[in-house]
Length: 329
Image (cartoon, rainbow, N blue to C red):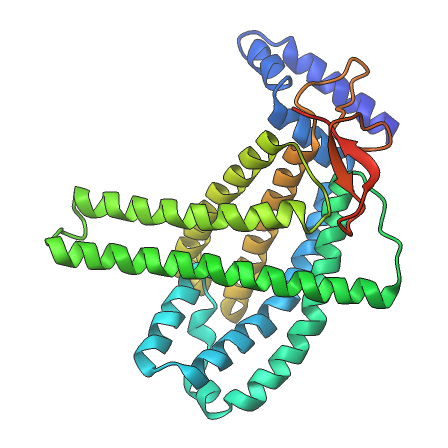
């Protein structure tokens, strides 16, 4: 590991000496984004993203089945179509695979089975995601009563589900409002006015994601990062998440369904989307955990055993300071 770090250091020193681009590379290496990447590289973020991707993929299908079963039993046909369109926006490539009529006919059975499966897979996702985010902060795993730990995971899952419903509701209302305004004032769908309204709807969706990320980046790993770094990280994550949705939606519609993978094209594309999303989340966590100034010894003071002072890092249960502290930016 030390040999790899020395090798990377020699490569970066060589790059900084290159004409024209060298000064730009040297400047890049002094930025907060680069120090955040160094933290991610130190904690082996590719492995963390792989673990989060697997648990997210497994938990996704019970979640969709439960939501679709509840919707099939409570919504009208037109409302079900709107929900399916919204799922297509939020989770590209999946809504086309849902058998709405089958869900209507078996809503009770599907709902119970999906709820039980979601409780099991969802708590696994919470535990895996919390562990990965705490690994980015270089904090140890929590040690507590297993029953209490599972109860906390269930509570976090319920809270996250509520936050997710709020963000989907905000995004849905924004999209409906855009359509209503376009129809009311007679704007052309492809005109400048229509484009501006769609940008406004995108901004509202970013706001919804921003609020969700505030929850995920603090309460889930049990940390209290410096406020400015938290706000910037949540904004980066929210914009990045919406752009990833647009990218993967276009890819699935234009490429994945016709690719050499055949029937597996959409699931493979979905796995890629989840992996990119988890890496974005890990980068946001690293942004919040990394100190704003590099210390003379070459280590950031955001967390870890020698973490510094300032904003506290809780032990994950909302109590006193944990094994490390995040410094003010």
